[in-house]
Length: 334
Image (cartoon, rainbow, N blue to C red):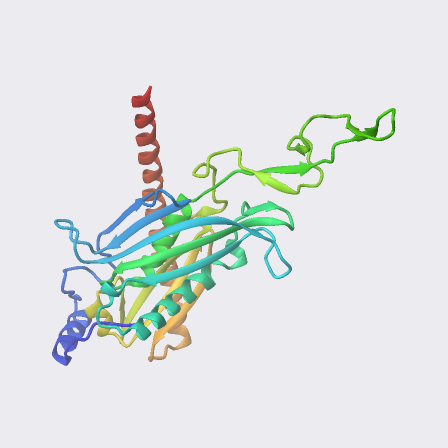
C-alpha cells in the first residue's frame, strides 16, 4: 500500500500531535472521527446496482478526498463441474492513474491486485453468498461482477472500498426469471401412411407446468427485479492506524505515512446484536501482542457497528429518494 512522501520534520509534527493530551490532528478531528462522507446510489444507469462514495471531499468545490465508484453487472453463466451452483461473485478494483500520479505502471498494477484480493476474498465467502443468484439448478446461474474504480485517493482507501461495495450491492436488483421447458409436439400417421400430421399446434415451449427446465425467460425489464438476498449481511471495514499507545481512524495520506502499521478489520452486521468478523489483515512492519490485538478487534466491532447502522440509514433514505423521484416522473407523463 502506498503513502504520501513527507519529510522527517512533518512526520515528527504529526506524531507529536497524535500523542499529546488531548490529541490534535491537522483538520481538528478527534482520534475516532471520520471526515465527511458523501454517498449516492444509482449513478450508473446501465448497471444492476451502483454507488459513488467520497470521504473528505471539499463541500465548496467538490475537490479532494477519496472517491470510489462501484457498479454491479449480472451476466448468465453455464454451471460446470468447477462452478458453484447458485451463482458466483467476482470482484475487481481498478485505480485511475490520476489518483496515484507518483506510481509507475507496475506499482499501480500491484496495488490494484492487492486491493482486489482483499475485497474478493472477503465478499465471495460462502457465508455472504446471496440465495437468489441461481436460475436453473445445475444448469444456469448469475455471475455477479462487482467492479470498483478509485478515481481519487486522500487516505483510508480500504474503508472507502468496502463502504462503496456495500452500497452498490444494496442497490442491486436481480432480474426475475421464469423457467421454460420444451415439449416435442405429438404427431400421428395420416390415413395414407405417408405423412406425419401434428395433433397439437401449440408452441412446444411451456412456462406453466415445468418439470425439466431447459432455458429461462425474463418476465420483467432488465433493470427491474428483486433486491439481492441478504443485503444486510454485506460487511464494512475499519482501519485502525497504530501509533505507539494510540490508534485513530480515517487517516489522511500524511497521517498514514506517519504510522508504521495499520490493522484492517472487516465485520458483518446482519442485525444490531448479530455480528461476524469476516476478515482481518495487518498492514505494516510492527508487531502486536495478543492482548493488545484482542482489545483492538473488540473496539473495531463497535466502530463497524456504528458505520453499518449509519450506512443502512443513508441507503434507506436513498431508496426513498429515488422511488419518490420515479413516482414524480411517472406522474408527469400521465
